[in-house]
Structure formats: C-alpha cells, structure tokens
Image (cartoon, rainbow, N blue to C red; front, top):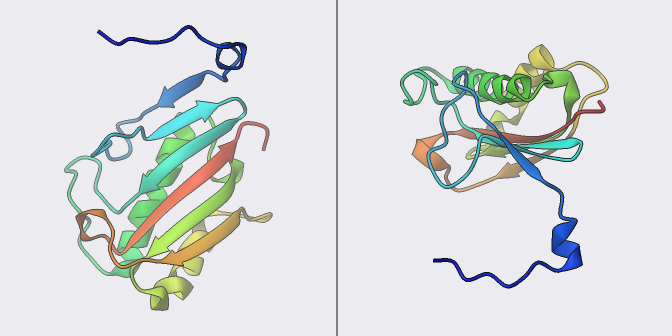
Length: 142
C-alpha cells in the first residue's frame, strides 16, 4: 500500500498529464512514455533510429539513421495531433558531431521556416548503439 500525505493546494492545482503513444513509432524501451501532454505543450521523448515494426536499429548509413529518428519523432507528434510544424524545440544528440551537416540536410526535408529552436549535443553513447537521438517539445498553439 502506498502511504501518501494529503494533497496541498499546490498539488491539487497541478497540471494534469496525458500520455501519448502510437505504434507508428518504437515502443518505449524503459520507464518513460513516447510523449506526455501537459497543458498546451507536448514533450516528445528521445527517438532513436529503431524500426517500429521490429524494434531493431535500421540498416544503413548515418543519413538512414537520422531519417528514421526524425520519422519516429514526427510519428509521435502526429499522434499528439500535430506534426513537424508544431514542434517548437528540438534537441539532437550525436555520437559524432561530424554528422551535424547531415542532420541539417535531414531536418531541411522535414521542417520549414520558421524552424524550431534547436540544440545539438555531442555524447559518448546512445541507447542500442544509435548514432543519433532527437527529442522535441511541441506546442498545440503552434
């Protein structure tokens, strides 16, 4: 049994969260949701280049991996009622920052101006040996 203290007024007014999930993107492989809606914002978890049907990494070069990661991200955005144009913030994680120009090329195929705000971060490793992971914040007002 969970022993919980009574809610305070601040806890009573906490913003409700809604989980968003779609079979068009890889299922969560840990203790997280594909996306969570809180108010007018949707927080999309990091997407790596897994084929949603097999849950295995896609074959091919970095471009194929980036394409799959962005396709997964956009599938979750669409399940949340938006799409690429509703994404206001992206974070891109790369195991090799030399691939940054390819990320720009792939993004140009999926996003139009005004582009979302973005950060690109070099990391030592990503889940399942992925070379790229992308996460986003989407606005329902965008």
